[in-house]
Amino acid sequence: MSNVAEVSNLGRISEAFDRLDAEGRKGFIPFLTAGDPDLKTTLELILELDHVGASIIELGIPFSDPMADGPVIQRASERALKHNFGVAEVLNLVSSVREKTDIPIILFTYFNPLLQFGLDKLARSAKQVGVDGVLVTDLTPEEGEDFAAELRANDLDMIFLVAPTSTDERLRLVSQRASGFIYAISRAGVTGARSTVSEEAEKLVARTRRFSDLPVAVGFGISNPQQVAEVQRYADAVVVGSAIVAEIERVSGTEKVAEQVGMFAGNLLGEGRIGHGR
Image (cartoon, rainbow, N blue to C red; front, side, top):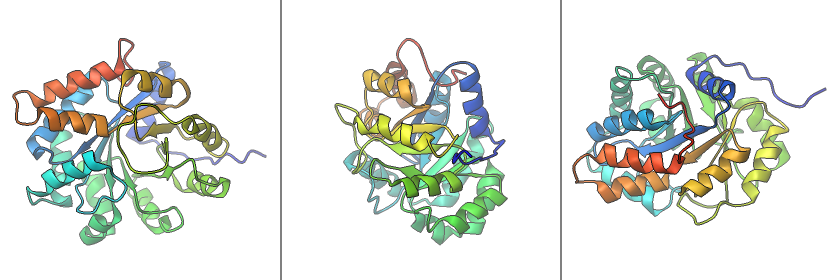
């Protein structure tokens, strides 16, 4: 008997990975902090990243104490929080995005903002505006069963993190609770661009696939085309966060921020673009 968990999901995230698989390509998942530098620009960034080949968008909800994030994304949260908005405004942003594109969107967040908003309200509202999944960085699978059930009831995917330090028992539990895809952290520690990708990442992807048939995306520390190509060799998708957020920080205040960030993302993908390439 196989120990691989069977997870059925017919949402946009699963459709995106099915399409990539059918076309023999790998996914590209860029991360943005909502509201950095402002919500209008975030909307433009999502549309531009969709245009250059993103498969899924990770949309970060700004938080005052982002423990898992390095200095680049911490600064992005600080800039966004100056605009004095919360979860409701991020959901309104997604609603506006849905008027332009159907690219899958997952909310990347900490648990506290969701608790303040209300978990059942969040699940219902997220479905209504067109969110496809939620990743809560500080919610473990042991503690996340009720929230995962709330999301499932609203046809939303629950994305969980696994790390090189994850035990087989943790990988098995994540495979039972997760849907959409599994996010494999390339190394222990906080987010941030690195000069190399940990060799542990490839081993972690192989270990995760022993327990789950879900796609596995690798993130944390990926910042250049060589690393993107390396990760796409063994993973189903590559997540790029700090490098893109750092580029937003660099060009913020100039004209055509979205266009410049789109060019940066396109360079990461190289000549043979991954993602869906709409």
